[in-house]
Length: 130
Length: 66
Image (cartoon, rainbow over all chains, first blue to last red; front, side, top):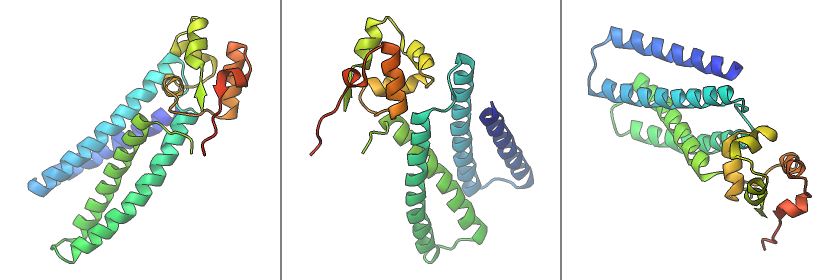
């Protein structure tokens, strides 16, 4: 139950931040892309939330040894890939005109996307023991 | 490592959900176990063997991976 509440709070904060951001600026092409990525990440979080609520209602544990292992492998892989992503962004910064906020925003959103993709990879592939 | 979880589960007329509840894991974990895509912890292997009333050796087979 704690996990569900924590996830709902995070989702609420993200939605609130996006609404404040949308109210402040008119959206150009770059903002629309960022918004799309944010919505995809929020969609992923909602998917996790629904899974947890279903497990809770079915009387299953929300997390067990496999889901913890999946999360562990996901964290490890996404951290590793994110390092290369940041190196790529820093390389790109010297070649393309980037504002600092854009660079940070792209980096953070990219890390979130890498995490979500890593989770999908391990969730469907499974975690065979080495 | 291979296992006979599905065989024993069907023999005892248990659904994946029933078995998952008995050993306190998610149904997905049972799915991955039955597909031999996940090797359980010793604790879970013990719990599964207890539910089926067999030994761990009967439930799991280890093959040398050299």
